Length: 280
Image 1: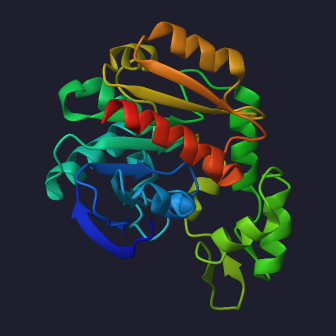
Image 2: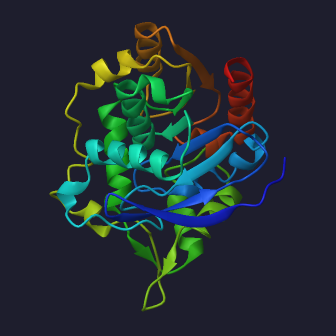
């Protein structure tokens, strides 16, 4: 299942959004969206192994990775990011794509699916639901509020491993080697909008509709991949979501934290392939 990835971009809603087109022979399109302060490389370990089932377009969302930053911090809202999904689907002429999203990206994908039930073939949510742990979300914010630039890739690997203890340092190094940029003074810096680190930035603003209303409106086949050791989505929160919507199938991935695809890529692929085999 090897495939050649192509890095390119599309301009929607006035912003150039970069994405990784994983190609392959699959007829079913899929859009993949990463979590807050991450980027499209979040799917590097799993996308090639799904390319016989899905033609995956993994996006750098606005303000992240290789995509342009929004003009104003106030432009980072879930409504705007959902609008980006709609515009991307139209720009790439994708018919009823599968949506895959981790954390913030999952919230955006779930909102799109709830608002546009006829436009989504299936939904894969990675450690996210209408309720998440406040303490876990604060952990993410603390990580983002930490260093924005460090002296070397080695320093970043050690720092990042403290927050992602279930992922190997080799895996972290591989991800960071394509997710950092060199600054003018020779340091290695993150690629997300630096304004995310400002004290006044409260995170991506909530959407206009209630998130539980959105979650219950999702009517396409939905796989919820929950990390057993996740500080963000607790088991009881995942079960509550699955109980509230009969279209949601819950699979808990052992020895995985919040970053399920990176922590346990083999188990991620196995569960995803089994789900897709039933619904495609």
